[in-house]
Image 1 (cartoon, rainbow, N blue to C red):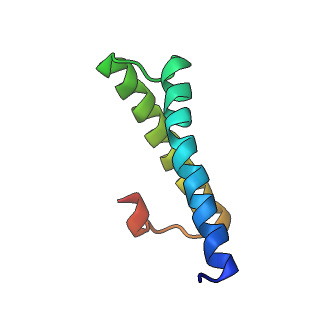
Image 2: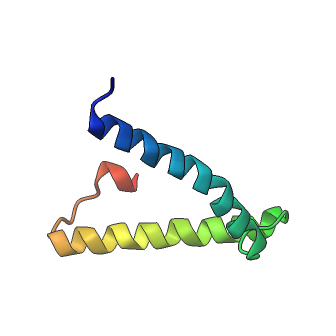
Length: 72
């Protein structure tokens, strides 16, 4: 009925759907994110800063000195 690659892709999607609640549970129980908004904000701010610095490093590695649309 369906091509074999389609059924394999559907199985993969089902596995991912089942793993999402597990991932959410692990993140919440490890103490990384809590119900404290200021604590979570500090994590989010640190992640944004890390991504900004990563983007700056990639730009310098590629030799581009002008800002791209991603950094704005």
